[in-house]
Length: 211
Length: 211
Image (tube, rainbow over all chains, first blue to last red; front, side, top):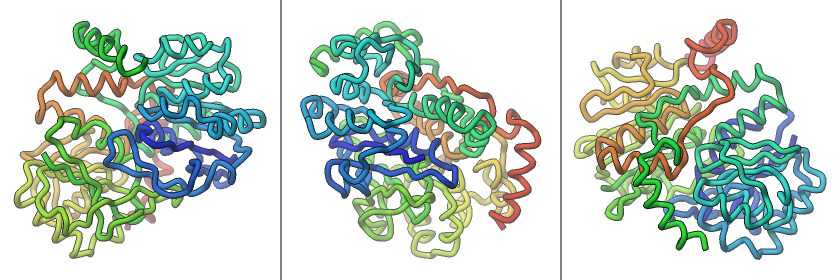
């Protein structure tokens, strides 16, 4: 299985690296980071670059597409080179997936119209405006489209998908070897669980960030 | 606070990127990836490079040191350039930390002798052989030394540390914005929880991998 993870300026690193670490470990798998140009791609915080080893054009028909999110997603919403690649890749993919606001790019490419999907909790309204049907679930599967909520949820998305692709035992082995037995020191990881005033503060800010 | 994340050939990407995504978000923070040489550093699977923006020599006195693990750790256990840098950085650091087999490098540098610490579950015996006192906890704090278990545990380590550094509210905000509300589809993320035969198979293999 060929797996392509898409990079663009100001992506969020964990969106990409979380699923990366879980997937593509079978001998017949190839996992490759792709971008419009090869070379280092700078993340949203400016302090980390991941290297794209291949261009989008080099990898036209991956079996699995993973689109991370990040603030830089907004600059890509009208990038027909990227959106066109997503449409073409999706035409032959087995799975088309996203993490965080990566789902907005899938939606902008027209791939999520009328489909159940998710995104970062602050971006669900935007996802709806692009024609998808947002849900509050952490991982949403609608046919071959698998979308994950914010940033860290890509790990859960990838393990869920891995179970579908390679079976439960393989997925559990990866969970064991990556010691994914999460024990967060707080229980504030969703808008339902975090303090209400904290959630409201960020909702207010996001009106400026996302529109 | 200056935060240095150390890269070396065949490191595990999530070990580094998990803590990275959680830490260093205050305006006065600087977070930097360092290695012996600047430029791309290839990970354990060969399919991803992260870029080291500075050399070890460029960043002699970070406030917080993060050492990831990965199979490449074994090649570094006698690298006096790296081990010497760890000792020097540790002499003035506020926190010295590791994820996965990164703790073996701290131990090889002599920094964990007699200290409670952890590592990947398959490496706890090696950690002991290097003079530390391994525990089975996911995140272990002994003074200024904070060590995490395998791969994904660096996220929990970093959030725990962030609470100590910047307060609970800041750490909870980061948890909310990274939507870290883990919902793994299986409960196989530790040797206590995974099927016993799976654990035993990997313990048997690790005798060859780690010795």
